[in-house]
Image (cartoon, rainbow, N blue to C red):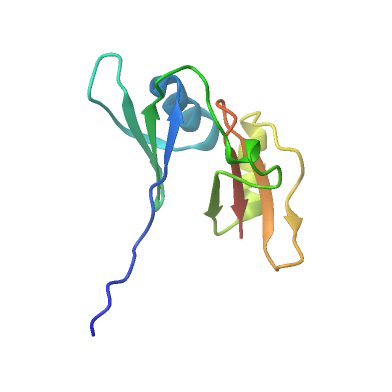
Length: 126
């Protein structure tokens, strides 16, 4: 039997203001805004950096929820990168707050952590 291979994933974060969130990802994490959709003001946006796409959908309220609200040691997205030190230096130069420098974990990955403007926790790992 033939088997299909998966190429990538594009998670959707529910946010109160898709324009503000997309611009935060552009200005702080170096993503490109692929577009705003479906209304004015928009209720959907997509950002991209390299092979990573993240979608933002407008929530029904101004509340946001992170996976860390239901599991403290969780995250909302794990993003694999090719040079974690270069990314750390880039984000620091942009003034992005990170709770720790690149840290090697017992499972062999070196990681940094960023919490976005809506409280979503991103882990970048190499």
